[in-house]
Image 1 (cartoon, rainbow, N blue to C red):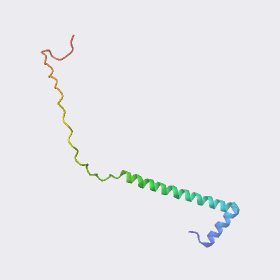
Image 2: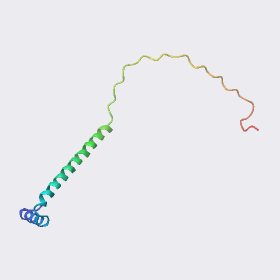
Image 3: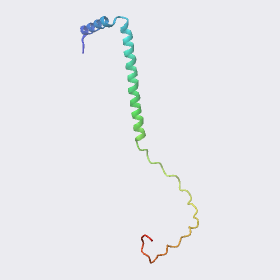
Image 4: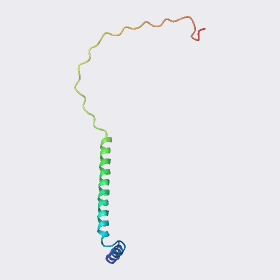
Length: 93
């Protein structure tokens, strides 16, 4: 980590390279970028937390009270079984 004199040298070099007018604008843009980045990271963490909550199994709910049994209807008529033939199964000519 730079010490006191090292910071002064860094600031002096920056002033020489970019000028006094550009440094505040650059600092502002770096600050805005950092805020946007921080907000996006927080949004990602919130999205992850929401997705984890959605994936967690929900506790089983109680079953509703027993409903009355449905009324039975007359059974459907059964079809007679197919009649067996003496011919073997296979192609017919």
